[in-house]
Image (cartoon, rainbow, N blue to C red; front, side, top):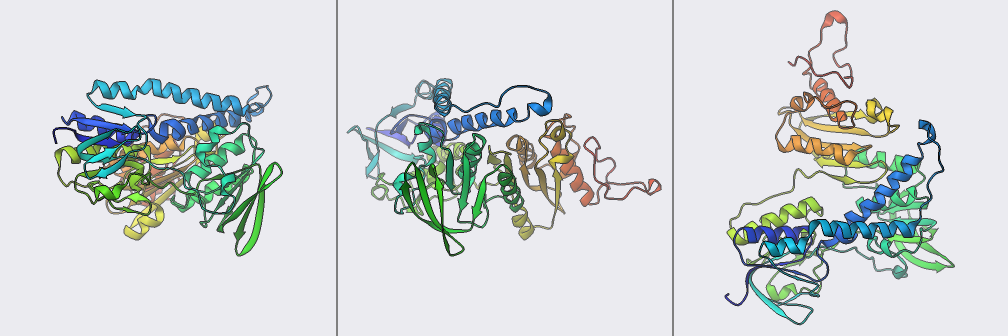
Length: 486
């Protein structure tokens, strides 16, 4: 197809940028098409600006400890308009740091950003919103996703996370509908800023995709911070304007209920950006609002691949990046090597944080004979020192192979701490190898060593001397290593 490209990537987020750069690196003639600004949801209105809010919330929470540590000063007041200005400055700074367009053009990728909506007119041709058309032998769809809006009366009064940046002032009260990662993070942030927060979810527990212990602990700690957690609702019926407030109507256990709030935030799903692409013209099938792909990231059309949020497989930045890399290799080099997301550390910048990787305890017990070792943050010296004793670290270990199947952490810096376990899992380390690492003291990461050594005791791999009268399963202290193993 001499009048076009070998590969066109649709979407300029983490998956798309990675796919374009990798395809070009492999020698293909590549174009990247982006309807708006490069960087995708993550940089522009997702994890980057949301992490700015989370950092501000952390500063507010740290100030609550001033008196306990002999510090004087008034608690900070939140100037929400200035904070939102700060988020936009950070977004700009991240764009300046990444220099995505310059980097791709320097690599030989043709960048067509701010091109408007793209749609297939035939299997090998895209019509762009600016009136131009482009042709390619192969395509990689990395169009991302968007916040779902449930169709109910008054939904126009509700906000999604993308609308937070348009608020003029901090709402005195907020009702967050949706208790998954986005909803919990927004609830935690607004509560830290002083808003009265209610968190509602149709599921029987918040963070329902996480280990049950994480869900339970986070609900307890949220309520301790003044967040009203309401799970198992029957659904939202409508929203009505009531003066300056909104009234949210919902059912709970068959009983009609209402909540009044200054703002209602919807965090109820993230479908792919498939509408408007006219995928039928390319022979690409969709399902449940996502582009359907196999483990090689190939769609129902042999010349079209997809990666990132638009596939609905694992909607995380790190996963999108990996999928973009893999999709580019498949598009340029071919082959059928598949990939499934198994070791993907993730978490939320809530208060406290939570982090997870691998199988939950329920999943692991359904597939393996395993042991589960849990250590509370209160056993950690750093937790006591920093006045952050809430939470736990749970390791799930296969009994026969002694490989780590999963880790689930609630507590300070949990998202950072879980990376240690993910690295160990990816390296195929056994739990005794993890227990033997000389973690710096006092740190929050040291809790991983504590949990690993407790797992060793549960496995009966720590030898003890009967002459001292020490029980075989005495709990390990933070600086105690596993010693001789059977």
